[in-house]
Amino acid sequence: MIEFSGFEQGIDRARSMSEHLASTTRIAAEQMLENGQEIQAQIVAQVSTARERLLTCLDGMAKAGDPASASQVGVSFITDSVRAYTENMAQWSDLILRSCHRGLDAAQPIAGERTVPAA
Image (cartoon, rainbow, N blue to C red; front, top):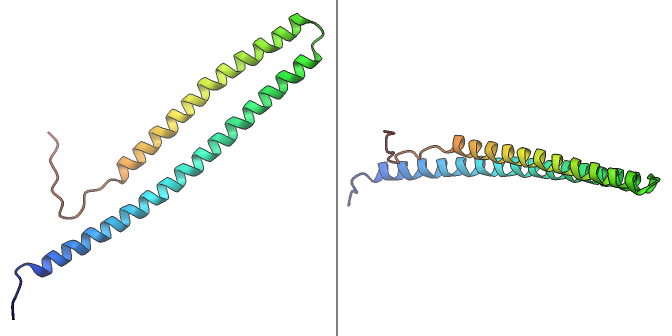
């Protein structure tokens, strides 16, 4: 009978690595689902707000009695749209940063994996 040196340890290490991979995959899938739900909610909210802003502008222009009033409604719409754009970009930036932090927090070394100590 041939005996392989360290065979059991190798099997245990492979099992440990596969369990870690399964755990990491589950965590990644949960995070992707959570991020997808956040993105969907963000898009719905921003589109809804833009729609309301446009309808308000069109209504204001339809009710404007003169060109100066209509111009003022248009300027107000543009000003509100630029403000909303900057707010939306800040929200997207925050969402991306949170997603990156979650991803970094979830990253764990695999059992038996060599890591380089921080300098």
